[in-house]
Image (cartoon, rainbow, N blue to C red; front, side, top):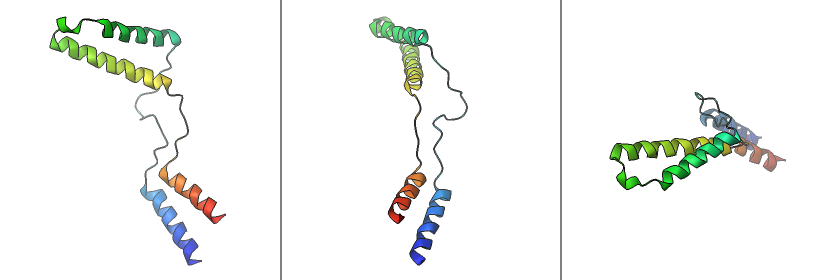
Length: 102
C-alpha cells in the first residue's frame, strides 16, 4: 500500500512540476496553409538566390538575402510539418507506470 501511494504521489508531483508541451504552435501566429504554387515559388526563389553572384553584393544586401532564405526555409519547414502526437514526459511516465502496475 505504501509503495502504491508513493508512486501515486510522485506521479501527481511530476504532473504539476513538468509543464505540458503538447502544443507545437507557439501561440501568437496561426499556421498559414501554403498552396503548391506558393511552395514552388518559394523553392524557385531559393534557387535564384543560390545561383546569384554574391561577391558583387554589398554586405547589407548579403545579410538581407540570408534573412530571406532563412524565412523561406522556416515557412517551408512549417508547411512540411503535418503535425503529430506530442507526449509530455509526465504522460510517458504515467503510461509506463500503468503498464508496470498492470
